[in-house]
Length: 209
Image (tube, rainbow, N blue to C red):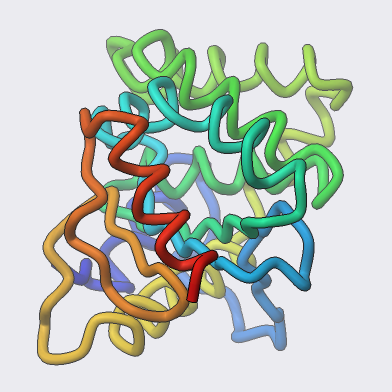
């Protein structure tokens, strides 16, 4: 489902008492990736920071995938953020706040501790929990506030997400998160709760080509 861009941005803006819509700014959004740019296998993961299935997949497989394939230069993992809700958008803005160097470390914690912040009783409590994660990662509360209140960045992120999903999953074939492309091809054999050996088999088949 592609969310209405203006509704999502307006809700986020209202939560922080921002102007309803800022003027468009030429902001380029980069999908964050980890692993060698020369890796033979590229896995594109479409994930939401508030998706429990994404958190489960991450907890079950990411550490092993990183050790076996990403750190060895065989696989490059690219994250494509999906925003189903306002809090998911704020989570992505939080992850990006420390820049590319901190992104994957902060993402690890946001997904590992998803229940703590995404399950908070209200938005203010959720943001307070996210701020604790950011501070632990070396950011200041002032820096985090600036990131989360960046209206132009929020608009650019949502526009990029909508374009990315539309281009990667033609004919409305996007079915939710997490979803995966392996070397540019949608792969529905990768799913939450799959056995790691099954995931390895998919990767090894690509490496053997």
